[in-house]
Image (cartoon, rainbow, N blue to C red; front, side, top):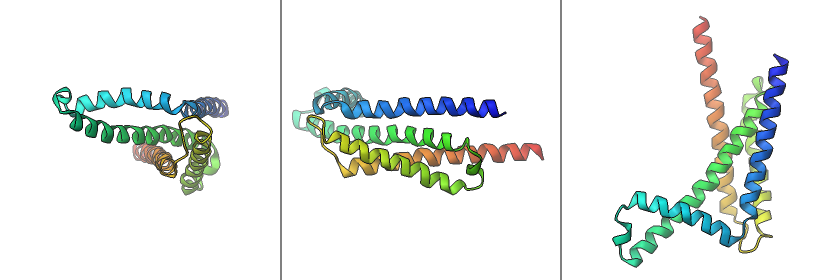
Amino acid sequence: MKIKIWLLRILLIAALLWWLSTIFGFSAETGEESQSFSDRITIRVVHLIEEDYENLNPAQQKTLFEKTSFAVRKIGHFGEYAILGVLVSGLLMTFSWFWKKRNALLMISTAVCLLYAVTDEVHQGFVSGRSPKVFDGLVDTAGGFSGTLFLWILVTMVLMIKRKRKR
């Protein structure tokens, strides 16, 4: 049993380090590179929202594109930190203290995500064409909390089902 836990921890630590470096890589992209990447995603989403996008007048296209771009970028922030929250909380769940203090998991995992979000935003301040944004840090932290909460609920439900089957 202990070997399985250690193997799981090693895998989670490797995944966590890979994901932290992925977030760092996104933040290291210049403003132009970042915008280009999100624009490619945005144009796909715009065509899903409005199949007749090409036939809209330029002002309508611009308005729809800008609103969609904002949402795409914020959902990206939220999603990447939700994954971070899942990885951090998953790692924390491999330690026995978690089972005695489950609420601490939400606080510790969210705090880790908040700390990384702050350092990530500061990092962006040193990248050409980028700047730190408090709102992005809040979106990141909300994503981290949501990922943590999702995993916490999932594990709790699985444990409840297991207990019911044993009865």
